[in-house]
Image: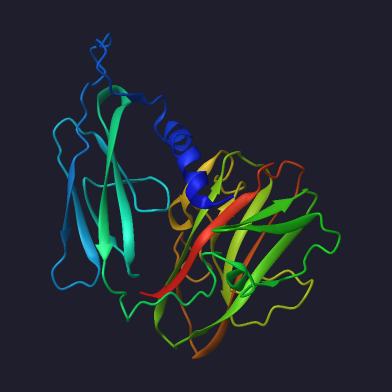
Length: 293
């Protein structure tokens, strides 16, 4: 499924899950005096001086308890003054969802036009947006599920991992050139409209060459794990925000990686389930990025 379409269908559900009962403002009589009316979601966008493709989003604060922002990865809880970076040229739609007393909410969107990409922070992942067959061809199957009990499917804009459980897993990977001692960040959009049990989704950036049929374990960076408390219910957002798997290097939840040699590393994404409760909808990914920090 195209992630843009999926987002439009799923964002309201995700906000309900994140915020509890979410009440929209309307012109009707407010029967609950504890429920805010006419929540104002307006915000301004200001380029940050001296920082490439960096913007400050500033919400008006009167009557706003929480600010949720979406820059194309699904809504996340942010600050009322939120700093964002958009490394690639393009037109972006920034949405602000303002939440007032009692969970009342309203939202507004504004465009940001980024004229030129930041040459210091190109996306090192090839085909990470799955826009076409050429993008999909950049990825190699890890061949972890010869029976087909776990498999990846591809749509325009996304890839989805499916598993029948019982330990069935599958992975995809590609080689990426990195520089010694430089820090990089890895991120992607992850989503599922239903929860799982006994499920893992892991991202690695290791120097070991993947071998067909062999479970990859070199330098885990981030992920989802029902044992660690995430992916048990529906989710939508950046893996760096909704994930809960610890980074092998930092021993904390972090999407930052660094390497002690210059050369090739392998970005490996693998997922599966031990029981029989891997989400029926699969785990969908898109907008995979690896950039110099």
